[in-house]
Image 1 (spheres, rainbow, N blue to C red):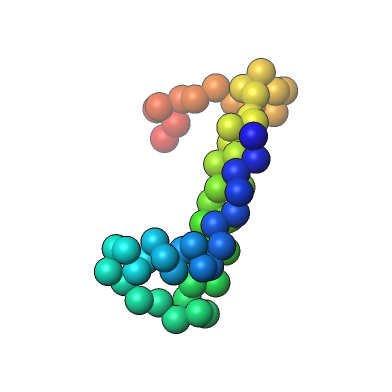
Image 2 (cartoon, helix red, strand yellow):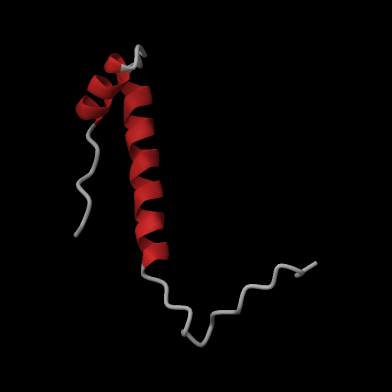
Amino acid sequence: MTPTPLSPSALAALAKDAGFAFDAERLEAVAATLAFIRAEIARLDRLDLADTGAHPFNPDWS
C-alpha cells in the first residue's frame, strides 16, 4: 500500500492543532521533507538482506 502524501494544507491543520503557525513556504518545505523521509523508509522496507551487495551487520565494525 502506497502512503498518501501529506499536503501542505493538511500539514497546516495539524500544525494549527498543535499550536504552531507556519508560513506557506515553510509548510511546503516540511511537506517535501516528510515525503522524502517516507520514501526512504519505504525503500528501506523493500531491502532484502539476501541481496548479493548486502553486508551482514557487524557491531564491532570499528
